[in-house]
Amino acid sequence: MDERLSTDVLHALAHPVRLSALLALEERERTPAQLAAALGIREPVLMSHLHLLDAAGLIATVPETGLLRARSTGWADVAQGLQHLQDASAGEPS
Image (cartoon, rainbow, N blue to C red):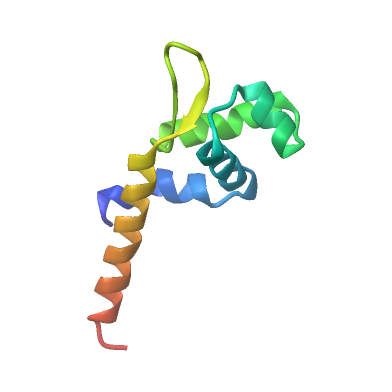
């Protein structure tokens, strides 16, 4: 498997809360409390999701402010990995 599309990344994208969190963080940087409120979930529940997103390299914490943000390079890697898989599968006989 393409290392840009690791199982950590696929796992992180597989849950609707994590995907919603990423989309919310693309709009603007937020604290965990702000993000939990925006998603309508409790902050302790969100923290386990944030851990997985961070481990997959899809979010980062801004050191100066402590705000969370989506990592644009993480999304670019996902898009490239999916394109690679699509290209590889198109070249294989059915």
